[in-house]
Amino acid sequence: MANVDESDDVAKILFEMPVAVGSFVDGKKLKDIEWPHSCLVVGIKRGGKEIIPKGNTKILAGDYIVLLGNEKDVVDIKNNIRKMTEI
Image 1 (spheres, rainbow, N blue to C red):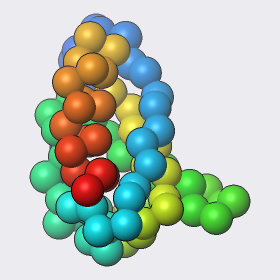
Image 2 (image 1 turned 45 degrees about the vertical axis):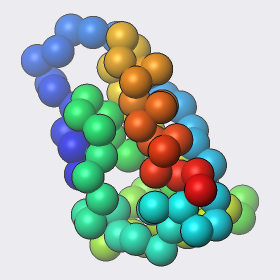
Image 3 (image 1 turned 30 degrees about the vertical axis):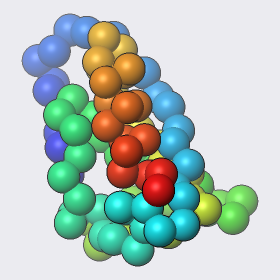
């Protein structure tokens, strides 16, 4: 899992991405996915519950991944995550 650079003075933003059935991340553990630089998975919304994920947390279709990223990189991060969460 990628770490957000603590020395970076750029504003951070939280955003959510839905996970589609059969997507690249569907059924994978967080630790087994190479996340884009400058973003951090901070939560998973699943069936009305919010999960604070750990490396062994499995991502499932229908989840919403909550990410923290640099505001200046958010468009690139969203595009990269979208490729992993859609089919």
